Image 1 (cartoon, rainbow, N blue to C red):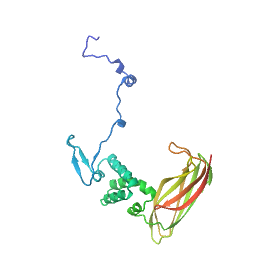
Image 2: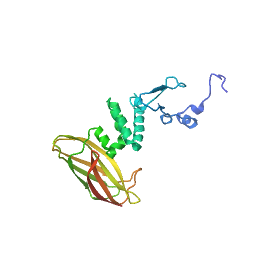
Image 3: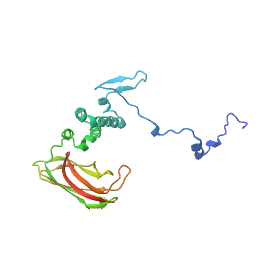
Image 4: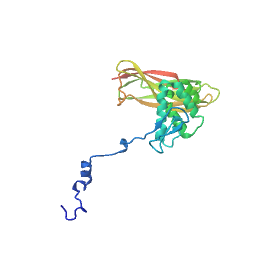
Length: 242
């Protein structure tokens, strides 16, 4: 024991960084933290939490304008969950929120309606000003026969037949062959365009058919479709080989 004890304490285990990391019993990181948000039913309501001064419960229409993007995205995810079982309710709520448009609200609402947008829900298309597409669409997939692990090139030609410009939300759908032999559709977001009256739009996209952590590919016929404003206007069949 040092003659200077207790003003001097021997801490040899803490002298070096590696030994401190080795001996520590607790480690706290951002992944251990949560962001609590208290939600109540209703609309336009705020309620104080008596046991936590300064903390309030709010309805989601209050939280959609929260200064934190984390909270806004959480609200959007909540509305997206609602849309899966009650799409008309989700669209009605979104339409109400968009009456007071802000950049943050528009971003949150678009995230909230992402499932319905991919499905081409007519009410959502109308909400964003996407009408019935007036166009002829051609799609080519090259090569038409490829092996698992290779990449196909999707080429799309959209010829507007409208007499005025029109907003187009363009996505493509790949119906992947599953182990059971059945086809399972996956919607890929592509682009938004304004097509001039009688004008044309040419698009290309590289689509890999290699295995990833969330999807395994199986040999057999696959189908590629082009969806415009929620409507499938062209399709092409390709053959995937092992």
